Every structure is written in C-alpha cells, then in structure tokens.
Image 1 (tube, one colour):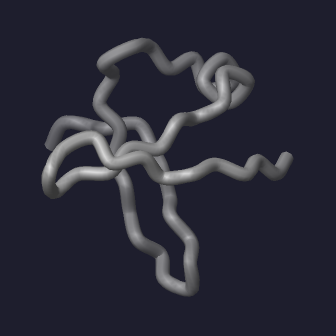
Image 2 (cartoon, helix red, strand yellow; image 1 turned 180 degrees about the vertical axis):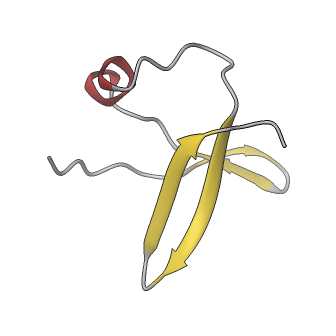
Image 3 (tube, helix red, strand yellow; image 1 turned 90 degrees about the horizontal axis):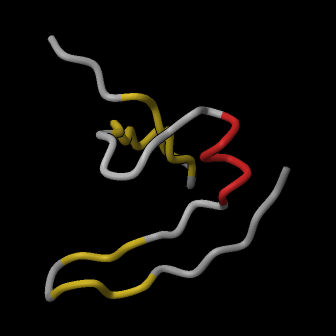
Amino acid sequence: MKYARKLTKSARYSLSLTIPSAIVKKYKWREKQKLALTDAGRGTLIVRDWKRR
C-alpha cells in the first residue's frame, strides 16, 4: 500500500502527519496510543508500538 500525505504545522516547532484509518485498524492502534518513531535513513521512517523498558 502506498499513501500520499502532507505534513501539517500543529504548533510552533511541531508538525503532524495523519495516518490512514486502514493502517490504524490493521495494527489495532487506538487514539492517544504511544508510538515509537525511528529514522532509518534514506527517507524511511519506522513506526512501532511504544514499549516500556
């Protein structure tokens, strides 16, 4: 699946990105759930469930 999304300015130093509902349902994410973002380089961003250490 490929989706095109735009970044939206949400605060002075923050941007937001909307995630398609199909992806949210596929991974069973909920509103206000914590997610971990990892910059994998070359324009790749990895989004995972946030896990406690």
